[in-house]
Structure formats: C-alpha cells, structure tokens
Length: 238
Image (cartoon, rainbow, N blue to C red):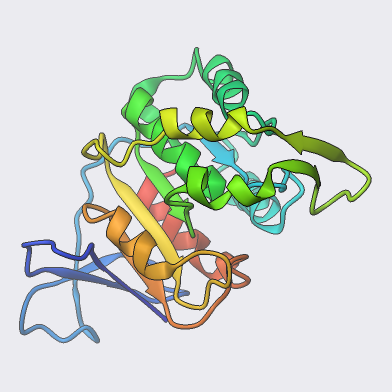
C-alpha cells in the first residue's frame, strides 16, 4: 500500500489515499476515515499523447517502459505512446525529445520518467507545461553521475557500450529545474527502499507534487504494475 500526500512542507491539511486495485483516487478531509474517503471529481484535460523517458544505462526494453507501453495499448489504445532510446549526452537527449514531441498538442500531452528519466521529465514538463509522473527520480544527477565518467554498458544489452563524457556533467546542470516552480500537476512515486537514490531527497525535491511514498521497495520499483491504474487516472489517459 502506498500513501499519497502533498510533499513535505505543504500547508494543506488534505491528504490523498490510494490502494492498488482501487478504481478511484480519493481525497480525505481531516477527521474522515481513509477507509471511506470521499471521491474526487476530476475536471482535467484528457491526455492523448504520452512520453516515457527511461533512466541512465536503461532503454525502452526496461520492465517499467514495457509495462507502461502494454498498459496503454491494452487500456488506452487511442493514446499516442512514445518511449525513445535517449542518448547518453543530456543535451542531445533533450534535443531528440524536443524534436519528437514538437507537433504534440501541449494541452493534452504528459510525461513519465524513471530515475534519470524523472529528472528529464521535469525538464520536459517545464518546457511543455504538461503533467508529469516521476518514478524514483534522480534529483542531482550532475553530482551522482560524476563517478560514472568513462565507458559504460547498457543494463539490457551488455554488448552495447557508450562513453559518459566529462562535459555531460555541465549539460545536466543546465537542465536542472529545481529552482523553478512546477509548471503543471506532478505525481512522484518514491520507494523508501531505493538502494540507488535517497528517498528523502526525492520527497524534498517535489514539495508541490502528489507523492506516493512506498515502504520498502527498490530502485527498479518491482511492483510498478500495481500503480499503473493510479498513473493512468492521474494523467487522465484517453
């Protein structure tokens, strides 16, 4: 079970509760039992175009990318879904994404990003003004990836090698959106058991977001499939 709430430091007294398998996202007022919450009435723009961004050393073959693609195909076949294989160079990665979504309708698109892809998703959301979902998002990849400078291999294809160059650190710094307010609605799915990133840092990074903070779990979010209905509802997939 994950509890959804406004980020740390939020002044609102409301909290949101969602359970895997539930069909509605419900908002609980103070004093109400989370066992019988009041349903939210959504008046949100339907998402017709969905972008998924994978993480560092990952690819469209990742489990979460494939699960998302399969869920969209099965339950939201009218949605345009794109998960590009982003290059290791951050500037080139965002140039590829910007070109790919150039003709997408900004009022009905959204982005999901995992790990480094979550960091990129925040950049896309700022520039497109669209809703975003971050899955165990990288908060300061310029700091964390400095130790990976050099030759690397892909998780899903060890024969695929690439070089993570020193200049990529500065490119990541240029993409950092932490100084900006959220441009649109945000949802962050964060596992306390993440063995790669600090969950507290992730929570603090997205104070305006709806947050699902999971007890335990791991960086890969092995139970991500349980939360796809929530992601779909949050994004109002067509």
